[in-house]
Image 1 (cartoon, rainbow, N blue to C red):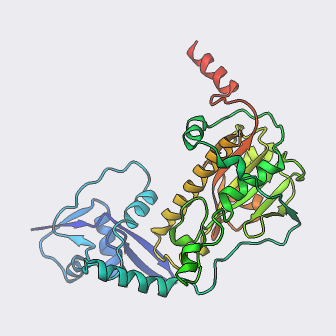
Image 2 (image 1 turned 180 degrees about the vertical axis):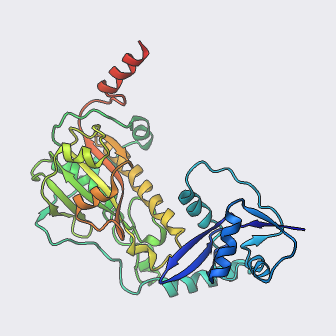
Length: 362
């Protein structure tokens, strides 16, 4: 008698009339004939089977690590299977020649990778052809003598905005400091006579690719008509992409969250995945794009705080509705995070929520 156990780290893909099995832990994929798929399906009922004799199909499934003679270690996971597939499936992704564990080998492999996957053209700027609004020169002196510790201590998530406007100078400064070429030319690369293919901004980004773009909903900003815009990094201007959005519309795409009522403007951090996936081809890099959004968010919030503006942020929204609002496709160009900016009071618990808490406690 032999006990056989089903690999718990597999899923199946039906494509072009064929069945594929994907072992996402070991990063292997196989095309399955019907008999092999049927055999794995039998195991799916209990996760294991006892057999008198290991068949040819079972042997081949064992060789492919889809079945095992030993039980698999149980894992704890409280999210759904989709989350587990991505969590496990993007771990332990190594480069080439992993056994060459020395500096010389690493730097050679790193150089060859960069040559092979780095685009030959210069950094790709995203531009729109809509009506252009030129922004004034940013007032970086306003930030120059600021204390990072003071900004960190004063930053908080506010949920009360009064609808008053933000000056166009602060608006311009905030966008340029966080999305623009804050450092100027990349002097080190120029001195070493290297072609500049990436870009430097206030926050780090894998490969200097900076896939996060600012899509802005303007409600009340000095000298800027209400509407939806894209911030052009290279030209430091806004391009209009859609008509004005009401607070009610914004609330609906933000899953009913009314905390953004009264903001002066909001920024959707939108990922342009095409900037990344040609160089970093494994889906592990999807994590890096979200990390980029986190870096942008933090520097943005601290900068806004330094400019005496209040901020509110959320990752809870209806992706498809937001994509429709911003006129993006939601797949290769997709929203990741929302930042609300304005004036009001530093209130984390809005009155309506506080009233409910008091009512429930009585």
